[in-house]
Image 1 (tube, one colour):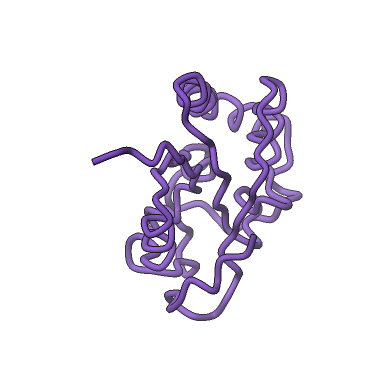
Image 2 (cartoon, rainbow, N blue to C red):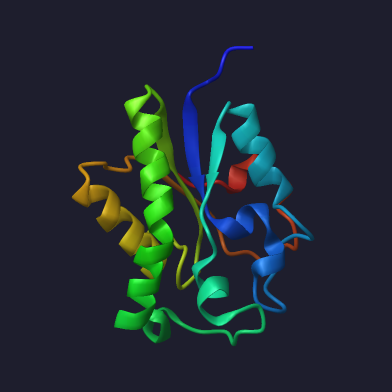
Length: 154
C-alpha cells in the first residue's frame, strides 16, 4: 500500500487520555473520534510528549497558562521538543507533508492558539523555517467523548 506521506502532529493526550489531570479526561483512552477523523483523512501521527506530565508528573495540580508561563517550563518544553523537531525535519527532507497540528482547546499547554507548549513548538519550527499552516483543536466540551468529527475546528 502506498503511504499518504501526510503527517499530523498530535497532542499527547489525544492518543492517551491517561496523562490528563484527574477529572479532566475526555475519553477512557484515546479520543476515538479524533483518531478516526485523522485516519480517515490518511494522516500518520507524530505524537508529542505531554509537557505537563513530564514536568510535574501524573498527580499534578490543575494549573493555568500563567502558572505554566515560566522560564523553567518553557526550557523544559524546548528540551522535550528537540526530538520531535528532528523527526519533522527528517519527514520534510524525505518528501512528507506536515499537514498541521491537532491540540486541545483551553489547555494551558496544548491549545494551538494559546498554549505555552504550542508557543514553543511553533517558535522552534519557525526557527528552522517550518510554518505550521493548519491548526486544529478539540473544543472544550462537557461531553465525555466526542461523538462526531464536526468537533474538529480548523
